[in-house]
Amino acid sequence: MIKKILIANRGEIAVRIIRSCREMNLQTVAVFSEADRSAMHVRYADEAYPIGPSPSHDSYLNMRKIIEVARAAGADAIHPGYGFLSENAEFARKVNRAGMRFIGPSPRAIHTMGDKITARRTMQEAGVPVVPGINENLPDREMAGRVMREIGLPVMIKASAGGGGKGMRLVSREKDLIPALKGARSEAITAFGDDSVYVEKYIESPHHIEFQILADAYGNTVHLMERECSIQRRHQKVVEETPSPLMTPELRKIMGKTAVKAARAVGYEGAGTVEFLVDDSLNYYFLEMNTRLQVEHPITERVTGIDLVKEQIRIAAGEKLGYTQRRMRQDGHAIECRIYAEDPDNRFMPSPGKVKKITEPNGLGVRTDGYVYEGYEIPIYYDPLISKLITWGNTREEAIRRMKRSLQEYYIMGVKTTISFLEKIMETPDFVNGTYNTHFIEKNMNLLRIPCMDTSNDDRFDHMAVITAVMEYLKDLEKPVNGSGTGKKETSRWKQFGRQRGILRF
Image (cartoon, rainbow, N blue to C red; front, side, top):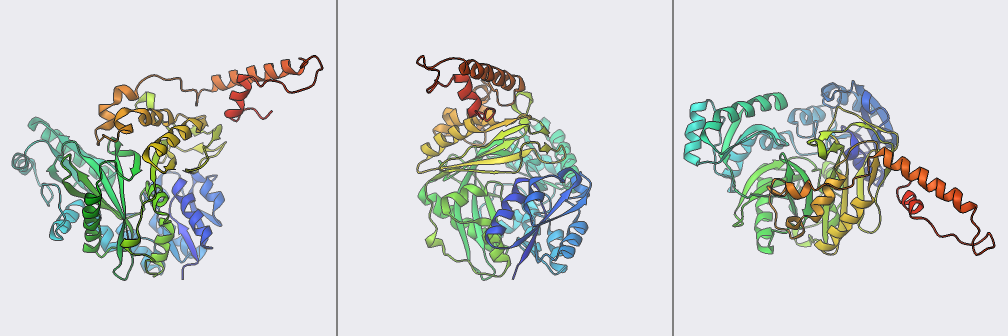
C-alpha cells in the first residue's frame, strides 16, 4: 500500500497533486529550492524539505537529492508531476531501485516513447499511422537534402529527444535547410543533451488533437476521449478544450482505438497522452506520446468526472481500473486557459515579481488550479505558468461565455499576465466558430493585438480608484438622506468598482 508520497515538483501541479492525496488520506512530502521556500506547495504539504539552490538543475532536477529526501521522509512513492523529471527513464529506474514506487509508466515505456525516432518506429510496427518521414538520425547535411527532396517541401526538422517545441525548425525553402538543421541541433543539445534530429513532412493546416489514456498492470487500457490543443504560440499550448470542434463520433471512435493500440504497443501503465496531427481531410497521424500527466488534464476530469491523479496513484499501487471503455461518457464542454506571468505587449517576455493583489474567479462551472498568493514573489528560474483557469458548460457556447466572464473577474496586480490576451482569443470569430487550427494565433494576430484598456496590472489606476472612492465615501457621510441624515445612500460607481476589484471593504 502507498501511504506517503513525495511530490518531485513545484507550483500549481504540486498543489494539485497534494489535494488529491489529501482526499485519499495519504501523507504528502514537498521539496523546494531556495527560491521556493515560501511557495504554496511547501505550506500545503504535510512535510517539506529543501533540496538545493534556485536553478532547477541544482534542485528539481537533482535525482540523488530527491531520492535521499524521499528515503529520509519515509515516502513509499514519488509523483513527478509534469516537466522536470517526469519523463526521465533513469529517474524512474532509480526510484524503483530505491524501493519506492514511481507514479508513472515503466522506465522502458518512458524511454521508448521519449525518443521520437524510436517512438515513430515502434508505432509503425504496431500499425499506427505516422507522419511521412524518416526513422533515423540525420548524420549529415547531404542526407538531409536527399530526404527533403524525397518527402517534398515543406518539412519539419525535429529533435529526437524533443518536447515543448524545442529543437524544431520548419523548412519551406531549400536554402533554409542548413541553417534550420544547425539551429535544431544546437537547441536540442542545449535543452536535452542530445543533438539527434530527424525529418518529417510538414502537415499543412494541422489540428493538434490528443487522447487521454489510462492503463493498469492487468492489460486493461481505456481512453478518456480527446482534447483539442491547436491554439499554440511557438509550439506551446495556450488554450485547450474538449470535445474538439473538429471531431466526429466516427473519427473519435477510430482515433480512440488507435490511441489504445499505441499504449498497448509499449506495455503502458498509468496515465498518458497520445498526440495526433489531423489534417483538413480528417486524416490523422501519430505525433508523440507524453508519458506523464498533462498540463491540460483538468478539462478531461471535468467532462468525465474522473480524478486522473487518484487514478495514477491507484494504478501505481497495483489496483485494477474500475471501469471499461463502454462506461466512458463526456458530460458537457470544458475549456482551459493557461495564465502566464508574461507581457503580451512586449513579445510575451516573462514578468516575474511580487503579486500585490489577486482575486480569482469562482461560481458554477469554474475551477482555478494555481499556486500564487498575495505577497508571493514569482521567481525567475522556472516556467512562467502561474495558474490554469477551467470552465465548464452544458454546451460549448456556455463554456465560452463562462470563460469570458471568469477572465473578466480574474485580477492580478504586481506582474503582467496573459489574461487580456486570452480574453481576446475568446472573442475571436475563428475560435467562437470552432474553425481554427495550429495557425490560429499567427492568422488572427491583428485581432489579438487590438489595443484595450488593460488596468489589471496598473498600480496608478488602482491608486486613483482608491482615492476617488474614499473621497466619495467621506463626502457621503456628511450628506443627509431625505433630510433626516439617516437612510440608505446610493452606492457610487467608484465604490462599486473598488469592491469588485477587492480594494475596498466598506
